[in-house]
Length: 180
Image 1: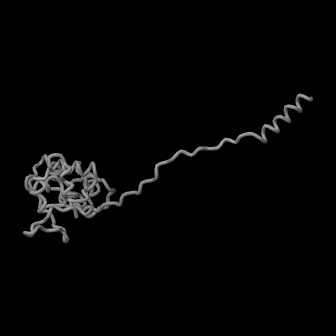
Image 2: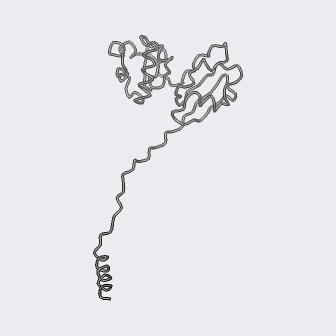
Image 3: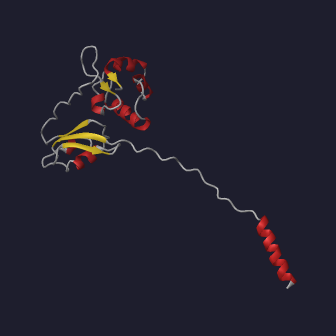
């Protein structure tokens, strides 16, 4: 009995002086804001042409599917279904055997001194970039790939960070590019 009392007494005193384990919180990554949706105007050879709201980073195939898919007679080989879309873009899906219509001109698009439309290097497709002097398919694809990997250019001269575009090339294209 004495032993039982000693054990119980020891338990009572140990419980009073015991260390209570604490829970250690592990840091968690802060939630990232959800990017705003984009609006794309899908026209041409699709089932339901119209303006569609899509998640940021959507691709051309997503817009075509949102418009009900390709219409009979659509030439989907005439467009890059894997290309990224941009907010405010118009996507034209051609019918087989018909050339695409000219691109619509934004109302507030910057102009060069001669009145020609400037190319926005943050939103232009590879084909639109090829219209710049000295920019062929390889450099155009490099600009698009750089932009997708690093985000939009913050200043036009940042295009010189793209492999192969140095000061001489930049001097040729500077009057014709914008980031707006």
